[in-house]
Image 1 (cartoon, rainbow, N blue to C red):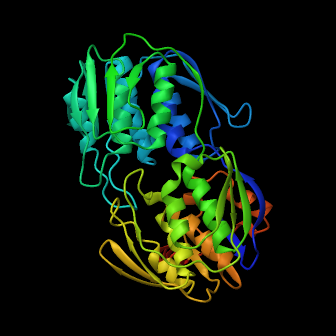
Image 2: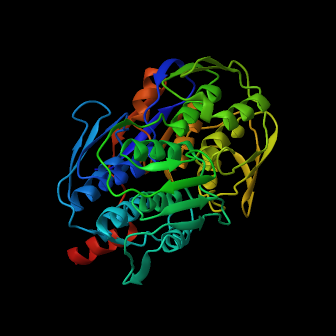
Amino acid sequence: MPHKFVVNGGARLQGAVTVSGSKNAALPMMAAALLAKGPTVLRNVPDLTDVHLMAEILETLGARVSLFPEPGVVVIDVVDENPTAAPYELVSEMRASFCVLGPLLARRGEARVSQPGGCTLGERPVDLHIKGIQAIGSEVIFERGDVIAKGRPTGGRVYLGGPMGPSVTGTANVLCAAVMASGMTVIDQAACEPEIANLVEMLNAMGARVRGGGTSRLVIQGVDELKPCDIAVIPDRIEAGTLMIASAITRGDVTLERCDPDVMLALFDKFHEMRVPFERLDASTLRVNCRRRARSADLTTLPYPGFPTDLQSPLMALLCVSEGYALVEEKIYPERFMHVPEYRRLGAEIRKQFNTCIVTGVDKLYGAPVAATDLRAGAGLILLGLAAEGQTEVLKIQHVDRGYDRLEHKLSALGASIQRVEFQPRRRAEDRRSQRAKAA
């Protein structure tokens, strides 16, 4: 039976909360475990539905996966290196699963992975992945909806720039394919995200020779063999940012522990503009103590170190109740505004045109039934529910479970009124007609 969140607004969040490991780092690192036979141990892994799905995919590819024998620990033991095909029924559920292409090609000499297609954020093609794999000497063909890569990479020069900026998953795929190439690979316009730097750290711990993690140029000298490793996933900067915004939208006093302030400078800059007070207590602790209404500020999403697209929906929630108006421009995924009609249901004033929205702050929001349209939109709706008068019901929360580790528990511990409850969805019109036909 499906679940929904029931949020009663009005509570001021207070207390301390621990930030979970990064979803966007954990998934490609799980895929990279295929590069070595034997048990790889990942620590600080968040307990998410996407992590469970990636574990299923790895098990079809010859790995025994032990999920959370200890909190945050995932053990991936590669015992059979013969399988080379990732099944469509699993790959189609999660775009990040395409990241198994590079490790399979590097280690097993061949990979067959279904094309992931589009998603609620619009079309997100894998052409940069393919171009990169071909540039380092492997053959790529398309057959019946699958991408098939063959031949051990030899190395080469790769340019990964694209119209939406460098591809994070494309960088991860080409990087993993190149670490066992017979020669050197140079990737220009590589994604600079901290999650890629974490992957580089893992690969080097496995015996790879990669320089430039966290920069736009990666230099990879191929090696013949890699070994399993034991490594920690970095804190989730998107979860940390969401919790900081939760404190600001409720005018709360929240301390975030086990986070990485050094990778959140774009949000810090926006908080300065919006008059949201925060302080860095030490190398891994932040505090947001906000007692007044925020002031609106314009927002443009950009590749790292710019403002992350994954925080666009949550920050727009704060802009909805801020003083003044703001221009929000989405330059990574231009179609990432499907949440706007749901925000309006709660009383937000938003005008949308193409990849831009004008958000005018309102004095009050009012609870209503809404539905998450994607992962980050779901988080934004929860934030609006915390600020709204009355009760907000958030449906389709399976999206939220893909990227936030027990978010409702963390918010409840800070004083929020939020519950996960089962509910019986209303039958669709075609279901009712079918029932009437059977009765007749």
